[in-house]
Length: 229
Image (cartoon, rainbow, N blue to C red; front, side):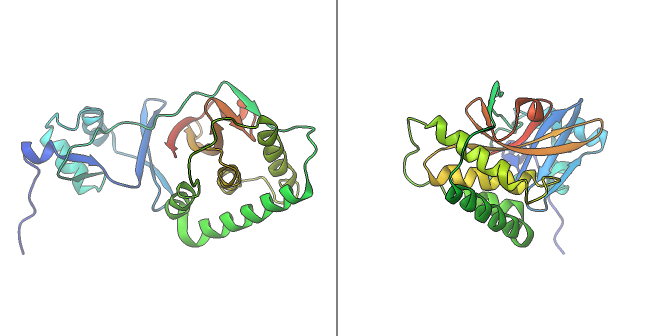
């Protein structure tokens, strides 16, 4: 059996965050989202200190920390060093919820269809594969002029299907389905997954630039983005 090699200074300069992993800092702790497993986790404090020493500078050559993090499958070695940076997303300043907007029944039906389809994908394929599918859904160039009336109708359509499908613990399929509907219409809205602490909780929402779609600003403002796509 060949001995496992520890990263040397040269290999420490060629490390990056494992694909499918993203992170942010909440309440002084580093929180990770592993999209392959759909799991949130934190590192032991001593290991977290080593990881934080590498954030933004994968060439810092903290060899012991690098080796431990590679062993834990947090970091991977590669030919080119990539910045190890927390999730970045535009801070929201306003929202469109579509309250009291009249919506065509066909749009509500399409929203329900996408919601059910995304729910099944999440169940059988997981978060990572479902997000990759959605990333490929926006075809061609995104629209330069966004129809804000359509954004309001789309948000309202998902509010209406929430009367049928319980909203409890449904923010992820609802957010992904809303993003899918918008991308079908050339709107390059982003999916944001955020976390908060004390107690720990997570939430998914859709955002276009600084505008939250389908949720009120109060519903998302306390969450720190851990993944954006």
